Length: 343
Image (cartoon, rainbow, N blue to C red; front, side):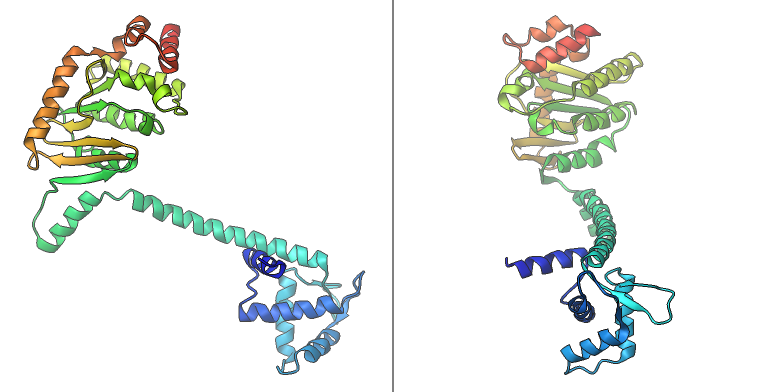
């Protein structure tokens, strides 16, 4: 990029649209004043400015009214300064100082404009991200055909999309007496925002739903398996304390640790539908209903229940119990047992 191109780009970023016809006329008039100016600047009369503009632009017949109007816009933009605004015959000054003041004003206006656009874009982006395409598809088909059709399977990609599907198909619709089963084999993809997502399950349990969360001991090796992933232990322990209090009040939310072989990495509600996580990076899951594959759902639930009976509640474990799950405790184990020991 040449120096001229760089200057033009910077001016456009400030909001001075050089390519615009009206702005080009303003630029021509500003250029005339700058060229006429001495250093230090000497105030120029309108006649001096108009005469020089007529010399430089012989092909265009410029009326004095038009020049007055453009000159006024330059003064309002602070690119040109009036020596004595109250004088009957005004005299004008333009130099590096007035240009800087004008550009600062244009820059501020441009920033306010862009921030307004960004807020609008952020709002639209949030609305788009919040769309549940499965529900939208059903509503669309019903509107067109008048009949309610159910989705039997779909591929879900990304942590946010997965939890959106879980919310619409399980967490928001679960009723008292329903059972939600969740298995966690990997924590790395779910580390960011884990507390907020866990609280969605907790809120569901508070409505009388039996929420069973089963975690593999593999997750305690997260430092070795996924270096750089970390948890806000303060938040995690607050959630654990909150869950303990809820259990005392009869809320059915339990987290259990199991040492068995890798099993279905899934979230299901009763035996009605299930999200089966099939890939970690990027997170990819298949969501299915009982109509699509009842055998798969039955097997996943049966396996979960078998491991659930063999597991022990994390909320009831002592530091020794937790350490016993691995012969070489990692940093995550040490941090958890340390916090439990303090409490």
